[in-house]
Every structure is written in structure tokens, then in C-alpha cells.
Length: 198
Image 1 (tube, rainbow, N blue to C red):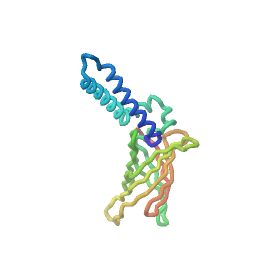
Image 2: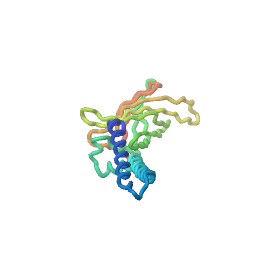
Image 3: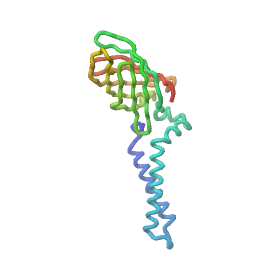
Image 4: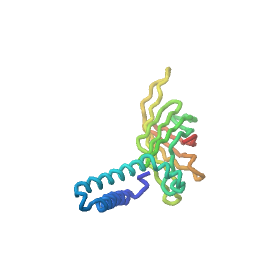
């Protein structure tokens, strides 16, 4: 999410906010009865409180903001947190089929990740990058993953492999993610994720 924002401007705004808060507190408490070091100490405490407020907003409060102001789902990027049912259409070594999985997306203001538990494998995020289509505003998730096949009795153990997918949000809302994928073991296919619950 933070990657969708002009990070230079955000850093500038935060720095200005810190200096304004510190300056206002210093100006308000510094007088003949309060020494300069005491005023600096109080102003530093105000800056620390602002720091905790911003930290809480980035890690927890952003979801509350997205609920209160649903337009943020369109302006920035939707909240994808939750459990998704996943249909995997695959092709590998001349064979094709369909697998089913459960995906858990975890997102905060600074990062996003997805774990996938499929019938024959588990996948973890190596890199996930949210983007918005510059023309349509449609949400897109670039997803690079590591898949570890499950070793079941009677099967030949397989080595982990890497893959990548470009998942696009449906135009009707944020309840469907779908897109093509490919892997380092030359598997190709299509993912369809439907939100089960948040």
C-alpha cells in the first residue's frame, strides 16, 4: 500500500508534523517558570506520542479508515485481508487439471503477503507488490512465491520451486482476484481467488 503513495511527500509531511508538534509544545510550555531542558523534555514526549499514533495508524488503524471511508478502496488499494478460496487451473508436462486451495492474505499499510495451502503443496510469499492500473484504476497484485510440494507416502519427493503471478481484481468489486501464473518447473496456469471471509 505504501508503494502506491508518493513516499517522498509522506516523509516530508511526517517530518513537518513532528517539527510542528515539537515546536508548538515547546512554545506553549517554555516560560520563566519552566526551564529550557524541561520544555525540551515535554516537547520530546509530545513527539513520541505522535510517533506512537502514526505507528498505530500504519499497523492497525488503516483498516478502520478503509471501513469508514470506502472510497479509499478505489483511491489507493482495497483491503485484501482474509481467507480466500482458490481454484488453480494448471498445465504441466503435457497434463492439465484443476486443484483447490485456501489462500490467506495478510495486509497492512506497509506490506502484503499470501500463504496458500493446496492439496499437494504449500506456498509462501517471496514478494508481493500492489499496483493500480494507471488508466482504469483497477487493482493488480504482482505476486512471487515459493511452493513446497507435500511429500505423501508412496509419492516421489519433489524439490521446492518458484513462481510468479499477476492477479487482477474484478471490475465488479474486490471479492475476486484472478490471473495467470508460471513457475520455474515450467508449470503454467490460471488462479481464481474468491473471498471467503475477512
